[in-house]
Length: 452
Image (cartoon, helix red, strand yellow):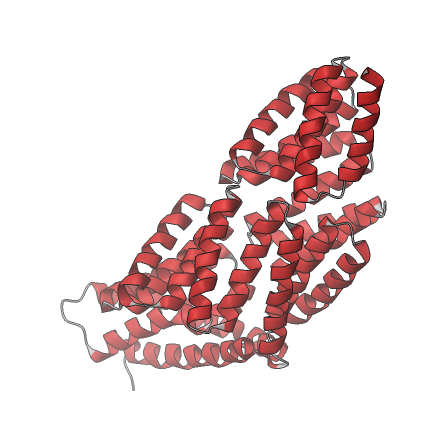
């Protein structure tokens, strides 16, 4: 009869193989993705039990002076668990639980002196902390992972960690720097002919171009991403590409295309059980409902999406949904709830260093206080928002705040100052091809004629 360590090795080996097999089906794409998720759900509790026994076993091993073959095999298994189920656990486990898996695996990998898996665990820890909105440890782990990947000549992971560093700069509002990192990522993926990595780089580039106001460039990147996802038969990537396209079409006021893309994405996310992406897609559909003046539907959908997201601990996505909920309340003229929601957005964004979301919260608060007639408070918040928009090079937020400040000056009777701010806002809107530029140009011409 095997001793405790030997029996534990057999048990862990079996469920490691189960995890690997189902993860491979999910990775391969096509019809196998949904089936792999269903099969994984059946074995999920057993896989968790096997994995969660490993930290105790590793603690026992760490007390030994000399390691046996069984000890080394258990270290190998602990080291292998996160990668064996990389794609499935990204769907089924929240970031906090993934961090526990990865810290255990990192400890085993370092004890085995395996640089290849060590850099992977470091980078994946960066991803998990990034999802929690903890940007400082995320940046540190990504940087360590990139340096180790460069040291061992792993171009795929060099690109991946560069891309994720780019995502951090994007979240902090520095989209121009983010694009530099994403371009480097894209170049490495094309050099090694990795279509999936190329798709990720294209998606990230699209996000930053959209934030900078270059929506046509964003759509171009998203379409390339979608083509690659369909070619690879990857339903999850297809849903993400469709979601991003939906957001971009919404930005250019093409509500029919936005709704069509988002509904297609929603169908796939429900099929795959991808709750985090599902909640974001629901947020996009709510944005469409807001523009169609279907406010109750939008608010209900957004609250449902935020509830779903609580399970995933995805701070970046939560920021986006809270933003949309604030927009819904504002559009329905429920200004008290809108202000509470944008205050919630600012607090969460400030706590996580997400300057783009902070700027958006301030911009919207400026607009609401102006609508309520509290011009002094609107101006105070608007000046703060404008400074932040300029700092992070957010042209869309800068144009929005400048226009609001111009309206505040107009309402206060300071028409010369109003014209100065509005003129700058309209120039920025024309540069970024804002959907509001034509309407604002007409308003600007009228106010200019009135003063002359």
